[in-house]
View (spheres, rainbow, N blue to C red):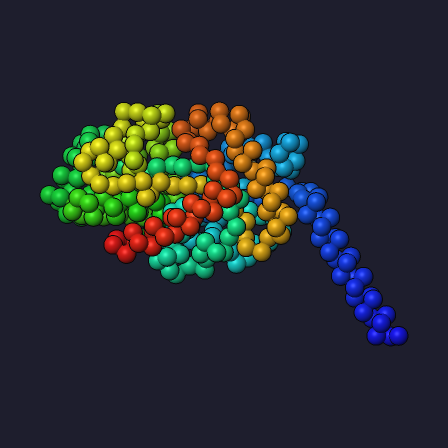
Length: 324
Protein backbone atom coordinates (compact mmCIF):
# COMPACT_ATOMS: atom_id res chain seq x y z
CA UNK A 1 0.00 0.00 0.00
CA UNK A 2 2.84 2.34 0.91
CA UNK A 3 4.57 1.69 -2.44
CA UNK A 4 1.30 2.30 -4.27
CA UNK A 5 0.80 5.63 -2.49
CA UNK A 6 4.38 6.63 -3.29
CA UNK A 7 3.92 5.84 -7.00
CA UNK A 8 0.62 7.72 -7.00
CA UNK A 9 2.22 10.77 -5.37
CA UNK A 10 5.05 10.72 -7.92
CA UNK A 11 2.57 10.46 -10.78
CA UNK A 12 0.56 13.38 -9.46
CA UNK A 13 3.71 15.44 -9.00
CA UNK A 14 4.80 14.65 -12.54
CA UNK A 15 1.42 15.60 -13.92
CA UNK A 16 1.46 18.84 -11.96
CA UNK A 17 4.96 19.64 -13.26
CA UNK A 18 3.88 18.92 -16.85
CA UNK A 19 0.78 21.08 -16.43
CA UNK A 20 2.85 23.91 -14.95
CA UNK A 21 5.28 23.68 -17.88
CA UNK A 22 2.42 23.85 -20.37
CA UNK A 23 0.88 26.78 -18.55
CA UNK A 24 4.24 28.55 -18.49
CA UNK A 25 4.70 28.08 -22.23
CA UNK A 26 1.15 29.27 -22.81
CA UNK A 27 1.74 32.45 -20.81
CA UNK A 28 5.10 33.18 -22.43
CA UNK A 29 6.25 35.89 -22.36
CA UNK A 30 4.87 37.36 -19.16
CA UNK A 31 7.79 39.75 -18.62
CA UNK A 32 10.32 41.64 -20.79
CA UNK A 33 12.64 39.56 -22.98
CA UNK A 34 16.36 40.29 -23.40
CA UNK A 35 18.46 40.10 -26.55
CA UNK A 36 22.22 39.72 -26.16
CA UNK A 37 24.21 41.54 -28.85
CA UNK A 38 27.79 40.32 -29.18
CA UNK A 39 29.00 43.70 -30.44
CA UNK A 40 29.27 47.19 -28.97
CA UNK A 41 26.63 49.88 -28.82
CA UNK A 42 26.34 51.96 -31.99
CA UNK A 43 27.48 49.31 -34.46
CA UNK A 44 25.22 47.90 -37.16
CA UNK A 45 24.08 44.82 -35.21
CA UNK A 46 23.23 46.85 -32.11
CA UNK A 47 21.61 49.64 -34.13
CA UNK A 48 19.46 47.24 -36.13
CA UNK A 49 18.57 45.01 -33.17
CA UNK A 50 17.05 48.00 -31.40
CA UNK A 51 14.98 48.87 -34.46
CA UNK A 52 13.68 45.40 -35.35
CA UNK A 53 12.55 44.78 -31.75
CA UNK A 54 10.88 48.17 -31.25
CA UNK A 55 7.32 46.85 -31.68
CA UNK A 56 7.77 43.70 -29.56
CA UNK A 57 5.51 45.11 -26.83
CA UNK A 58 2.54 45.50 -29.16
CA UNK A 59 -0.38 43.28 -28.19
CA UNK A 60 -0.42 41.65 -31.62
CA UNK A 61 3.31 40.90 -31.38
CA UNK A 62 4.93 39.44 -28.23
CA UNK A 63 3.01 41.69 -25.85
CA UNK A 64 6.21 42.34 -23.90
CA UNK A 65 9.08 44.74 -24.64
CA UNK A 66 12.53 43.55 -25.68
CA UNK A 67 15.66 45.08 -24.15
CA UNK A 68 19.24 44.87 -25.46
CA UNK A 69 22.26 43.60 -23.52
CA UNK A 70 25.64 44.36 -25.15
CA UNK A 71 28.35 41.72 -24.63
CA UNK A 72 31.11 42.77 -27.04
CA UNK A 73 34.60 41.38 -27.47
CA UNK A 74 36.82 39.27 -29.75
CA UNK A 75 34.68 39.68 -32.85
CA UNK A 76 31.58 38.31 -31.14
CA UNK A 77 33.26 35.40 -29.36
CA UNK A 78 32.76 36.83 -25.87
CA UNK A 79 29.01 37.24 -26.27
CA UNK A 80 28.34 33.94 -28.03
CA UNK A 81 30.55 32.01 -25.60
CA UNK A 82 28.51 33.49 -22.77
CA UNK A 83 25.20 32.83 -24.46
CA UNK A 84 26.01 29.21 -25.34
CA UNK A 85 27.13 28.31 -21.82
CA UNK A 86 25.48 30.66 -19.30
CA UNK A 87 22.25 32.09 -20.70
CA UNK A 88 18.99 30.62 -19.43
CA UNK A 89 17.00 28.34 -21.73
CA UNK A 90 13.57 29.67 -20.72
CA UNK A 91 13.18 32.02 -23.69
CA UNK A 92 13.73 35.20 -21.68
CA UNK A 93 17.19 35.76 -23.14
CA UNK A 94 17.66 35.52 -26.88
CA UNK A 95 20.76 36.46 -28.84
CA UNK A 96 21.36 38.25 -32.10
CA UNK A 97 23.29 36.05 -34.52
CA UNK A 98 25.67 37.10 -37.26
CA UNK A 99 26.40 34.72 -40.12
CA UNK A 100 29.06 34.00 -41.37
CA UNK A 101 30.66 35.23 -38.13
CA UNK A 102 29.77 32.63 -35.50
CA UNK A 103 29.81 29.74 -37.98
CA UNK A 104 33.25 30.67 -39.35
CA UNK A 105 34.58 31.12 -35.80
CA UNK A 106 33.34 27.68 -34.77
CA UNK A 107 34.95 26.12 -37.85
CA UNK A 108 38.31 27.74 -37.06
CA UNK A 109 38.02 26.62 -33.41
CA UNK A 110 38.83 28.08 -30.02
CA UNK A 111 35.20 28.83 -29.11
CA UNK A 112 32.56 27.02 -27.05
CA UNK A 113 29.79 27.11 -29.63
CA UNK A 114 28.73 25.82 -33.02
CA UNK A 115 25.52 26.00 -35.03
CA UNK A 116 24.29 23.06 -32.94
CA UNK A 117 24.47 25.21 -29.79
CA UNK A 118 21.57 27.39 -30.90
CA UNK A 119 18.05 27.33 -32.31
CA UNK A 120 17.35 30.00 -34.95
CA UNK A 121 14.14 31.99 -34.67
CA UNK A 122 14.11 34.35 -37.67
CA UNK A 123 16.36 36.53 -39.84
CA UNK A 124 15.92 40.29 -40.19
CA UNK A 125 18.64 41.44 -42.61
CA UNK A 126 21.44 40.73 -45.07
CA UNK A 127 24.19 43.36 -44.92
CA UNK A 128 27.00 43.15 -47.52
CA UNK A 129 30.61 44.01 -46.73
CA UNK A 130 32.00 47.15 -48.37
CA UNK A 131 35.50 48.55 -48.85
CA UNK A 132 35.82 52.06 -47.43
CA UNK A 133 38.39 54.84 -47.03
CA UNK A 134 38.40 58.18 -45.25
CA UNK A 135 36.86 61.19 -47.01
CA UNK A 136 40.31 62.69 -47.73
CA UNK A 137 41.91 59.44 -48.93
CA UNK A 138 43.94 59.51 -52.13
CA UNK A 139 42.09 56.38 -53.21
CA UNK A 140 38.97 57.04 -55.26
CA UNK A 141 38.51 53.58 -56.79
CA UNK A 142 39.07 50.02 -55.61
CA UNK A 143 41.60 49.60 -58.41
CA UNK A 144 43.73 52.43 -57.03
CA UNK A 145 43.76 50.87 -53.58
CA UNK A 146 44.66 47.41 -54.88
CA UNK A 147 47.37 48.73 -57.21
CA UNK A 148 48.95 50.60 -54.30
CA UNK A 149 48.75 47.50 -52.09
CA UNK A 150 50.47 45.41 -54.74
CA UNK A 151 53.27 47.95 -55.05
CA UNK A 152 53.54 48.38 -51.26
CA UNK A 153 52.92 44.97 -49.61
CA UNK A 154 51.51 45.25 -46.09
CA UNK A 155 51.26 49.05 -46.10
CA UNK A 156 47.51 49.20 -46.72
CA UNK A 157 45.98 48.81 -43.28
CA UNK A 158 42.33 47.75 -43.19
CA UNK A 159 40.19 47.83 -40.04
CA UNK A 160 37.42 45.28 -39.43
CA UNK A 161 35.14 44.09 -36.65
CA UNK A 162 37.18 41.00 -35.72
CA UNK A 163 38.70 37.75 -36.89
CA UNK A 164 36.66 35.44 -39.13
CA UNK A 165 33.73 37.82 -39.27
CA UNK A 166 32.32 38.92 -42.63
CA UNK A 167 34.79 41.82 -42.81
CA UNK A 168 37.78 39.52 -42.36
CA UNK A 169 36.45 36.97 -44.86
CA UNK A 170 36.01 39.73 -47.47
CA UNK A 171 39.57 40.98 -46.84
CA UNK A 172 40.95 37.44 -47.21
CA UNK A 173 39.01 36.91 -50.41
CA UNK A 174 40.25 40.20 -51.91
CA UNK A 175 43.82 39.38 -50.95
CA UNK A 176 43.61 35.88 -52.42
CA UNK A 177 41.98 37.09 -55.65
CA UNK A 178 44.30 40.04 -56.30
CA UNK A 179 47.60 38.91 -54.85
CA UNK A 180 47.80 42.17 -52.91
CA UNK A 181 49.05 42.06 -49.33
CA UNK A 182 46.94 43.95 -46.81
CA UNK A 183 47.39 44.39 -43.06
CA UNK A 184 43.98 43.50 -41.63
CA UNK A 185 43.49 44.98 -38.16
CA UNK A 186 40.62 43.58 -36.04
CA UNK A 187 39.33 46.28 -33.72
CA UNK A 188 37.82 46.02 -30.26
CA UNK A 189 34.21 47.16 -30.19
CA UNK A 190 33.01 45.74 -33.50
CA UNK A 191 31.97 47.66 -36.59
CA UNK A 192 31.52 50.99 -34.81
CA UNK A 193 35.13 50.97 -33.62
CA UNK A 194 36.35 49.80 -37.03
CA UNK A 195 34.51 52.71 -38.66
CA UNK A 196 35.96 55.21 -36.18
CA UNK A 197 39.47 53.98 -37.05
CA UNK A 198 38.88 54.83 -40.72
CA UNK A 199 37.32 58.22 -40.02
CA UNK A 200 40.13 59.15 -37.61
CA UNK A 201 42.81 58.15 -40.13
CA UNK A 202 44.25 55.43 -37.90
CA UNK A 203 44.11 53.06 -40.90
CA UNK A 204 44.24 53.63 -44.66
CA UNK A 205 40.93 51.87 -45.19
CA UNK A 206 38.51 49.33 -43.85
CA UNK A 207 36.00 46.59 -44.52
CA UNK A 208 32.67 47.37 -42.92
CA UNK A 209 28.93 46.80 -43.25
CA UNK A 210 26.93 48.54 -45.95
CA UNK A 211 24.57 49.91 -43.28
CA UNK A 212 27.34 51.47 -41.18
CA UNK A 213 29.07 52.78 -44.30
CA UNK A 214 25.86 54.26 -45.72
CA UNK A 215 25.32 56.35 -42.61
CA UNK A 216 28.99 57.41 -42.45
CA UNK A 217 28.97 58.46 -46.09
CA UNK A 218 25.72 60.38 -45.62
CA UNK A 219 27.51 62.27 -42.83
CA UNK A 220 30.37 63.07 -45.23
CA UNK A 221 32.98 61.05 -43.33
CA UNK A 222 34.04 58.33 -45.79
CA UNK A 223 34.12 57.13 -49.38
CA UNK A 224 32.84 53.68 -50.38
CA UNK A 225 34.93 52.02 -53.07
CA UNK A 226 33.25 48.64 -53.65
CA UNK A 227 30.63 46.18 -52.44
CA UNK A 228 31.35 42.48 -51.82
CA UNK A 229 28.13 41.11 -53.30
CA UNK A 230 26.78 39.59 -56.50
CA UNK A 231 25.14 42.81 -57.65
CA UNK A 232 25.01 46.49 -56.76
CA UNK A 233 22.73 47.60 -53.97
CA UNK A 234 20.19 49.58 -55.97
CA UNK A 235 18.37 50.87 -52.90
CA UNK A 236 21.26 52.36 -50.93
CA UNK A 237 24.46 52.40 -53.04
CA UNK A 238 23.47 52.44 -56.73
CA UNK A 239 26.68 54.32 -57.60
CA UNK A 240 29.09 51.85 -55.96
CA UNK A 241 30.36 48.93 -58.07
CA UNK A 242 30.69 45.38 -56.84
CA UNK A 243 34.15 43.87 -56.63
CA UNK A 244 33.09 41.53 -59.43
CA UNK A 245 32.22 44.52 -61.64
CA UNK A 246 35.69 45.87 -60.93
CA UNK A 247 37.16 42.63 -62.26
CA UNK A 248 37.80 40.78 -59.01
CA UNK A 249 36.14 37.42 -58.39
CA UNK A 250 34.90 38.15 -54.86
CA UNK A 251 31.37 36.88 -54.28
CA UNK A 252 28.78 37.31 -51.50
CA UNK A 253 30.38 34.94 -48.96
CA UNK A 254 30.90 37.82 -46.52
CA UNK A 255 27.29 39.09 -46.55
CA UNK A 256 26.26 39.50 -42.92
CA UNK A 257 22.96 37.76 -42.15
CA UNK A 258 21.44 38.97 -38.87
CA UNK A 259 18.61 37.56 -36.83
CA UNK A 260 17.56 36.16 -33.46
CA UNK A 261 18.21 32.78 -31.89
CA UNK A 262 17.74 31.01 -28.57
CA UNK A 263 19.98 28.57 -26.77
CA UNK A 264 19.57 24.86 -27.46
CA UNK A 265 17.30 23.35 -24.80
CA UNK A 266 14.68 26.12 -24.94
CA UNK A 267 11.16 24.58 -24.75
CA UNK A 268 9.72 23.84 -28.19
CA UNK A 269 6.50 25.68 -27.30
CA UNK A 270 8.52 28.85 -26.70
CA UNK A 271 10.50 28.39 -29.93
CA UNK A 272 7.26 27.89 -31.87
CA UNK A 273 5.68 31.04 -30.43
CA UNK A 274 8.76 33.13 -31.19
CA UNK A 275 9.06 31.62 -34.68
CA UNK A 276 5.47 32.63 -35.39
CA UNK A 277 5.64 36.20 -34.06
CA UNK A 278 9.20 37.42 -34.62
CA UNK A 279 9.06 37.46 -38.47
CA UNK A 280 5.86 39.54 -38.21
CA UNK A 281 7.70 41.90 -35.88
CA UNK A 282 10.60 42.24 -38.34
CA UNK A 283 8.20 42.96 -41.21
CA UNK A 284 6.22 45.65 -39.35
CA UNK A 285 5.84 48.88 -41.36
CA UNK A 286 7.37 51.02 -38.57
CA UNK A 287 10.41 48.74 -38.48
CA UNK A 288 10.75 48.80 -42.28
CA UNK A 289 10.61 52.61 -42.33
CA UNK A 290 13.30 52.98 -39.65
CA UNK A 291 15.55 50.38 -41.24
CA UNK A 292 15.36 52.11 -44.62
CA UNK A 293 16.14 55.48 -43.04
CA UNK A 294 19.24 53.94 -41.46
CA UNK A 295 20.51 52.40 -44.69
CA UNK A 296 19.92 48.89 -43.38
CA UNK A 297 18.96 46.21 -45.93
CA UNK A 298 16.04 44.05 -44.75
CA UNK A 299 15.73 40.34 -45.49
CA UNK A 300 13.09 38.63 -43.36
CA UNK A 301 13.42 34.85 -43.24
CA UNK A 302 11.42 32.27 -41.30
CA UNK A 303 12.89 29.76 -38.87
CA UNK A 304 12.83 27.03 -41.54
CA UNK A 305 14.55 29.29 -44.06
CA UNK A 306 17.23 30.23 -41.53
CA UNK A 307 17.86 26.57 -40.69
CA UNK A 308 18.49 25.93 -44.38
CA UNK A 309 20.70 29.02 -44.69
CA UNK A 310 22.78 28.01 -41.65
CA UNK A 311 23.34 24.50 -43.05
CA UNK A 312 24.33 25.86 -46.47
CA UNK A 313 26.71 28.42 -44.97
CA UNK A 314 28.25 25.78 -42.70
CA UNK A 315 29.13 23.57 -45.67
CA UNK A 316 30.24 26.50 -47.84
CA UNK A 317 32.42 28.14 -45.19
CA UNK A 318 34.10 24.86 -44.22
CA UNK A 319 35.28 24.60 -47.81
CA UNK A 320 36.07 28.31 -48.26
CA UNK A 321 38.15 28.63 -45.10
CA UNK A 322 40.40 25.73 -46.10
CA UNK A 323 41.79 27.95 -48.83
CA UNK A 324 42.04 31.13 -46.77
